[in-house]
Image 1 (cartoon, helix red, strand yellow):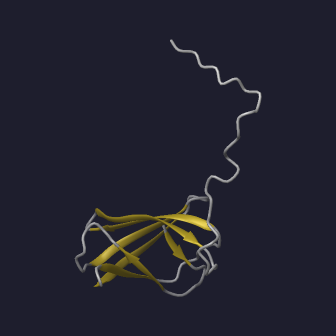
Image 2 (cartoon, rainbow, N blue to C red):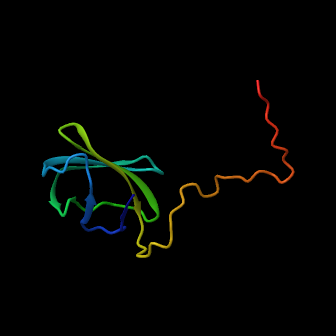
Image 3 (tube, rainbow, N blue to C red):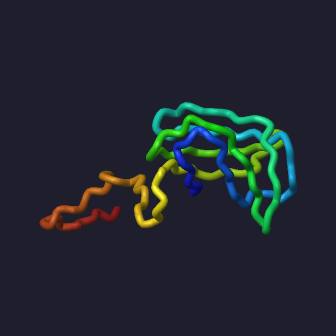
Length: 117
């Protein structure tokens, strides 16, 4: 998962895509997981530094504490896919839990009986 800040300036993505070639003309589709809205960035270029591919993402309207899905394509083929979490927090001790409040514990008196057919 990539962590980005909710700022209106360019940000650097340090990734490991399917190929480590230097390319131009990549397209990024960034989808807000909550609203389903998609923002498309075109004509992205990259550089390779110390085995990682660096891509500069221009200013986006990213919302704090929101998860996005990222798909980057080149010549119509998938080049990279990942999730983005937007936070202004600098610490790594706080984690985003996408399953918060979805798990329910079994009742203490539950007998755990199963029917086998």
